[in-house]
Image 1 (cartoon, rainbow, N blue to C red):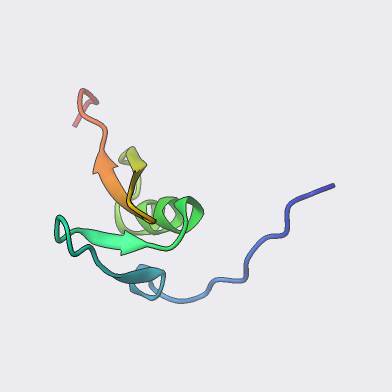
Image 2: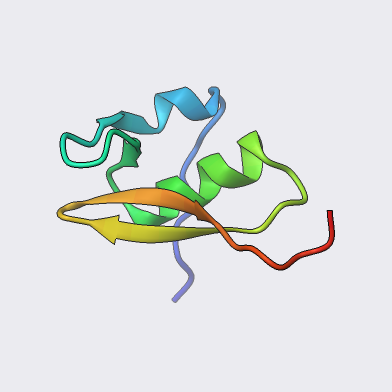
Length: 66
């Protein structure tokens, strides 16, 4: 069975749930939303979605060519 593709036509800010109370970073409801926003905001740069409580944040993966 294939996974359903979400219909998303808006800017990445629409995927953002808010800011994290613990660290102040932008938070996303799911890992999938965080990765989708990262691809849109930072094309060509690898980011990792990391969990913080019940929300997800973006983290830059260092060591790549600039």
